[in-house]
Length: 336
Image 1 (cartoon, rainbow, N blue to C red):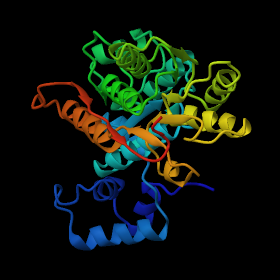
Image 2: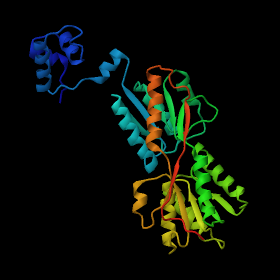
Image 3: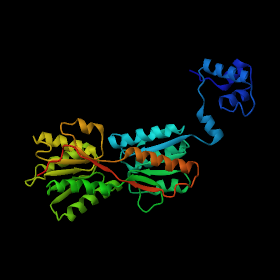
Image 4: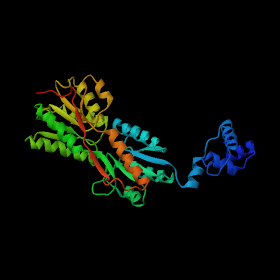
């Protein structure tokens, strides 16, 4: 099926392609095109099902009105939530979002960035999945507005907005300790990611502050499988833990599956706290206590950072923000 062009509309209306183009691009008033001609063109465009060629418009204006969002895994409800919030905020600005999933693979991330650059994106919001920042720093240094979200690079001047993961893990661990738990296992995610490093640090320092040396940090991925396998191994030990701190809700889901398979009960046999809130946590047979990240605020601040750079404004003095999480107390922790 051949697309309708402005030439087709010009032929139908008997007006020039220049006049048609000016009306359809919203410049009718600027060029003093009469109301009668404007209506004639709009009626013809509607009748012919005309769809604007944004690619051609991009070539003329140099602007794509497109923002790229790269996340480590859309299978993770936390990142899926961020994608939804970012997309909604970007839409309010009249932009569209292209979303890419790096699948926790730095090479896929690099290729995605190259492909998105070819689409003339005007800004990039990214939760980087690797430790190498060179390809992202290069974009930032070239002047493309780049904002890191959730994960970021310490020591670089690239703007970011994230959660105070140390505070969240320290508070969650302290809550377990205050309920009598001394033998606690932390199941971590991707070891090199910034959130994971600070969560592990918060966990360890809370344990050490309370003179507790019997603890373990296990695992290596923010996946259900990681949570499942590590919990299976934990439950085979002679000296079983009384509590688990899962560093993502995907890890927690795997842990719950393993606990149920062993015929154990949460929290009677094993208490659990997870990072990240999600509505489904309330519908589990035992609703999980969780460290809730302010996803809506994180997304809105990231967009404000991006917008200030798109408009080349200097109103925002800081460009690196950590937001405090909150603990939502539910039924998965038992006092012992």
